[in-house]
Length: 414
Image (cartoon, rainbow, N blue to C red):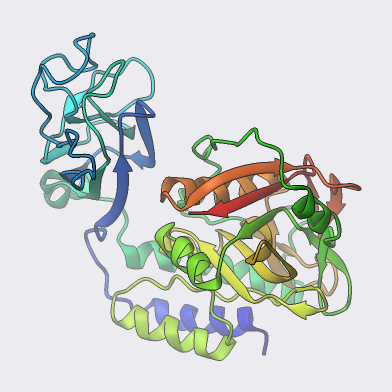
């Protein structure tokens, strides 16, 4: 049985048994904040009724005994006296703002709570202008949950986790059955996304990458030029483009991706159903939706990784596959990747079943992968490289078209 048939059928039958949770579970996010850049984009979109708890710890002691940063701030005379973003707070203090432009910063310090009254987007920064007043980074934890008011006000209460999952699975099952049995079949070129509104994986501009201007090593360029441009399925249908390369050991790659909040995809379809069932009963979130097998260098992917809001994983996710390259660079392992963003469901034009539909602007997923590693402070340098005969307009193995500027993102890990 195809894994989507098995997974949808099992979870659909269980959806009526889910324990309804009146309050969404809190989510926790970790960041590192320094004086440069001025503001760190957390990529957290906040909604009215949410409670944001921000806590921070002091930077590690510096080897040169220079003044280390403290979330409460440092002595006023220990740095620039230029106008600070928040004049009422000490230099170097942890501050926050809820909008990109024109928002008044608020003091965070070692810990604060923010009750969200309107749709917002969280930025974190140090209270600094000009020369940084201290050295090091602050380790910051942001926890997002429903406020006490939202918990007691049923009219403002969002859908429970169980209700969201039921609704999304109902839509997924309907689309799936339409494709399998020909009832109310969707247009082949039309994606059907989650019916519950926000999935947590909408197109959000990733944090701008800090791209190195230094040219790539000549031997590395030559090796990259020899890479296949696209992966293929088991029937040798050409599919997703190769759009990034990671240089680092297997251990370093796995640690970096884990730190960047990527999850290893399940590889066993029946095990995936068992995992989903058990975690559903335990009120946990299933984050390892299986992905299909694709091939590069004549073999299947070594690893598949994905990222999505837990409830949306069935319908919408960021994901990629990586293969160990048949060459090394200066003794370092080279990993070749193909990343795409699933945005819903569509008919598989190979067999008329239902499959995931990708965002045709595949460069966005390339940027998302790099941005996530940069945000986790796991990328040493990032470079673009345009190989010969770049892929710019093509179709994947299921018949969906996509487009790209043809460049590969070359990621050197820390």
